Image 1 (cartoon, rainbow over the protein chains, first blue to last red):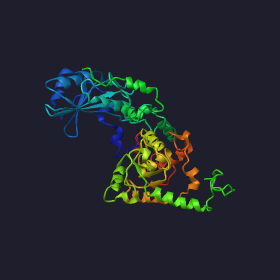
Image 2 (image 1 turned 180 degrees about the horizontal axis):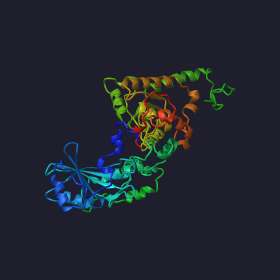
Image 3 (image 1 turned 30 degrees about the vertical axis):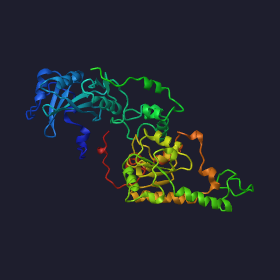
Image 4 (image 1 turned 90 degrees about the vertical axis):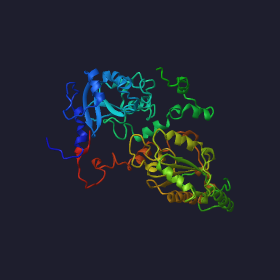
Length: 234
Length: 227
């Protein structure tokens, strides 16, 4: 195989830990500094914590099996020694080449002023993970965004709909590496579909009410009105 | 206008009722002058600013550039009382029906200015989510290049539009003010036009050297393409 001389090689190759299959026995390198939360996680969820690494100098990343992600997140939020009360971001990464998608949780503890990044690797044939909405309300739209752009299903999410793309978008999930840059349909088809969106998909109910009775009330509007407010039971 | 029943030279493809160019009656030319004078000096813009071009548009209204000098001091935030739709900024497909609806709601006479590279062609956003030029959605009278254009460019575009209005004639009313009720909420361009309008400007599919459509002496590094 010819030796590549491209500066994009590292991007194409993806991060080293995700290139091979998740391995529970993968030990942390000797030079990895300790992180109190990771140590606590290793003690409590020894079989769930797959890997721990430090990137960018002092950013601790812990890889967790997706099956037990909710348990781990609950512990990180509620344990008096952890108190990760701020979920800064939920996002996902696709490194392409058939590698698993990574769901990334950016956690911050205001109490201890401590940050932790948690990653869960989902194989492409099982893109499902538990929703973190019932722990942090901020996960609501973030998880909708990940669902919209990556097609990852969040179990028990209260309102898992598309958030950025039109609700009737039929071309797939745009941030996946196998998605063509210009979409799957022709420009003419995209334009036609864009202009035939239902009213309720691009105006909110209050805006429609402001304009009085619209001439053509789409059938989905009644359904939209009947939908309960997004409230958390917990 | 029915001023003369005599057979007259046709404007290309027009209906027989249209007066021919070059034979304006005295009355139409005088009324034209008055109507066009009134219209071009009181154009009320409907701002549709979606991005950085909108900031330049605001600057054009503000005191330094003072668009009010041209009779456009009244920003119309309702399409019903607007004459000029100024689309400033990129328009994603999700916003396309809103733009079309605003255009449909505007009353005649109405004109449209496409401000900036993104509104005119899609600009650098040759991607799945972006309208490749608002002329696929609504008819456009003046395109302003630039990323973003300076306020002077917007003022110049409005002056060009004034020039265009100056040349209008009531005799051409049927053509200029034509409204097709069945075209409401439909794309302005048909499929071939959309393909032609959105094709040549892209830099991802049609214009890159892999497509073979452009000549380039750049070093080809296929390894840089991440599959």
